[in-house]
Each structure stands twice: as C-alpha cells, then as structure tokens.
Image 1 (cartoon, each protein chain N blue to C red):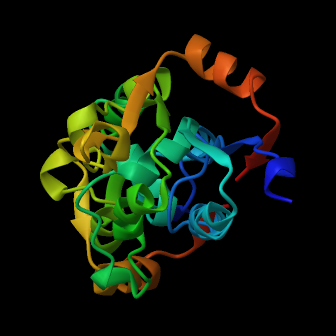
Image 2 (cartoon, rainbow over the protein chains, first blue to last red):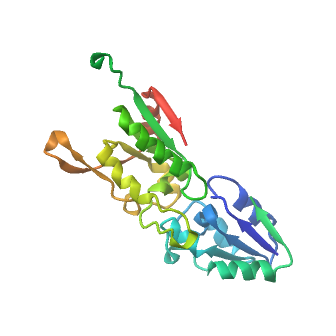
Image 3 (cartoon, rainbow over the protein chains, first blue to last red):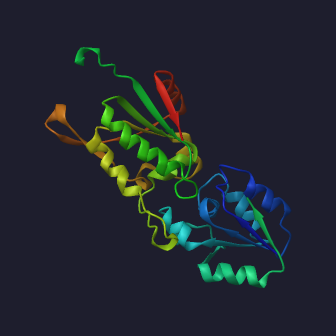
Length: 100
Length: 138
C-alpha cells in the first residue's frame, strides 16, 4: 500500500496520522509541502527516523528543489523519487491512501 | 492635501510555505502593490512562512514560477523591515545562512547596503504585532 503526504508536518497532522496507521512494508511518498518532513534537523526527524524501520519513505526531488532543499539534506534511509517513480509506486501498489 | 497624509503601520504576516498553496505568492504581490502608498511596512515570517525565504529555490521541475527572486526587489520599494521568528527557524533546523541575503540601500547613510532580515524572538514578534495599525495575514 502507498501513502501520499502533500502537506507540511508543521501545518497539519497528516504525517503523524499517516505514520501511526501505516503498517510494516507500506510505502510513504512525501511531495509538495510534504517534503519538509524528509529534511534533517526538524522537530519531526526522530519520528520519521523511527518509522524507517517499518516503512519505505520516498521524497519527490522536484518538490525538494523547488523549495530550495537538496537531496544531501534529507534523512538517511529516505529514497529520492522522480515523477516516473511516483507513477511506478502508484502502479505497483494495490491501493493509494492520500493523506490530504 | 499633503499635510493631511496619514502614515499607518502595516504588518504582513506570512505563515505558509511557498508553492504548496497560493498564499506566499499572493502576499508578495500585495506587498509590492501596497509599496506604492508610502506607508510604514513590515513583513514577518513565522511558522512555515520562514520557508518562503529559503535560498536556492529552483522550480524547473515543478513547472511553477520561481518567485523567490522577487523578495530581493523589496529593498528597492523601501520594504526593508523583514522579521523572522527564531523559534520557527529552530524547529525546522534552519539558520540565517539558509535564507536569502536580502538587503536595501540606506538613503540616510550614503546608500550603504544593509541587511533587511532580522531574526527575532517570539516575544519581539509579539511586540511588533501589537504596535501595528493594520495586520494582513497570509
């Protein structure tokens, strides 16, 4: 199952709820303002890090770069994704839960 | 007429990240329009609003207009009081080095180039809000 998050973790509780309900083996894609959750040294870093043992987390590079962030500033273990990878994730998962 | 001119204190309060919603761009547009009216203008960036000032924004990949360079023009419109909340920076792991270097030329000091951005405590931002005539929130 794929979960998508497009809101900043500072703005809504989408990230926290998603990680609370995501089960082992699920994938989480961070895009648009959701990318802020992928960055090092934020208030949410420890939450994201602890989730990485169970779920795969991806971040959309185009949204990262638009906001002035670089891939070398994301938490270790988070994978980068291009738009094509976004499509593959959607196609390869049985269902998609969008945490709006 | 000139001696009846009223100068009010305007604060633009920015709390949203850029690109994910239209707030950041709309705020900037209103600031630039408002700059024509010779008022006492300040900008405050708190919460996710601090992300608007992040340097090195590059929107080629998302097909949206990169409006971050427009912040650099604010100094030329005499908008040079830009305040950033330190707590909001800290919880996002940001420092002043992560922000764009916004400056203005001080006409009272032989046009010396000076920084427009000040990082303030929440206490100072509160005081800033209290002294305004008008606060416009985005």
